Length: 342
Image 1 (cartoon, one colour):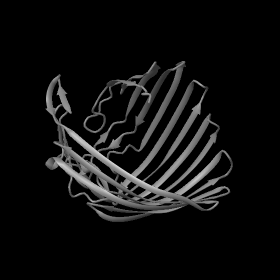
Image 2 (cartoon, helix red, strand yellow):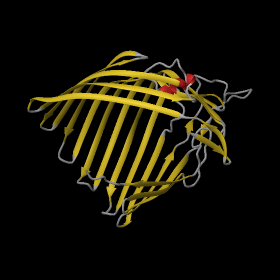
Image 3 (cartoon, helix red, strand yellow):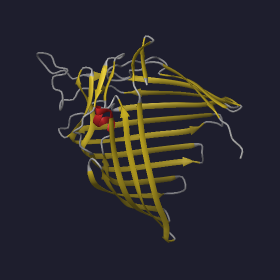
Image 4 (cartoon, one colour):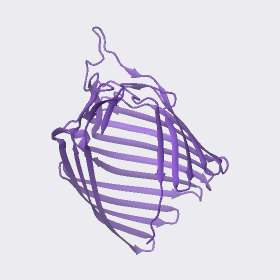
């Protein structure tokens, strides 16, 4: 990878990432209404990069899982269990259960509960990277603990053919050792564990196919996130709104427009760095102002080529160091499709 500033090379480094994911499972139907699945899985991660401490790191996870799904008239019941053994963090068992109920052909609700386990990624543990052109550094934290959670979800969904969909998704998660990031100083980002946290929220979505050429999507999300002292977790917008429009102006010519608005959010953390935004008299609570992203793209197909031309962050919204840092981005994707006869 090469980094440039004013067309001059700042830094060149090679980065190789390998992910081998082997999965084998077996399904059978012991009863007409039951489907049982069990299997094994192994994931092997390796990264070789100058951006990683000591340039090379690996992590292996061995997994076994079992699941039983029952279809009973208007109900679908699902329960399962998953066992994992991580080379860095040892063993963990995570059960889950879910219930889906159909009121009628167009209206359903679903409830689920599950225990979660997430080991830190190799980058969260070992990254050591400086972006000289923007002026920030990202440092890994080798002493991170795995994240554990208890999650409850309930959703409601109503749809009418392929024309209209409305969905409400609600979640409540209790977490231990939540993996999060913070600023060690004004330009150095790193990772740490939050002892205990609660993250809850609600999401409301509408998909509407106005006609065969025009589609509209709307999403609103509210998030409540606090630590064990009931103080807000940083870097999380309490509210976001997303609007997308997809339009086929004429045959095989597609236009996409999306705008996403982010509510203002707190960006300091009293747990970690008490002096980062403090003057001589009183503590300063620093918020990033609300902002929005506007993206636009055009795509078409020509013979064996698929073409996409677009602009991300069209209005060049810039919120460094606590939000967007790329600014406006223009891109062109060209895909050539071919087939080889045998």
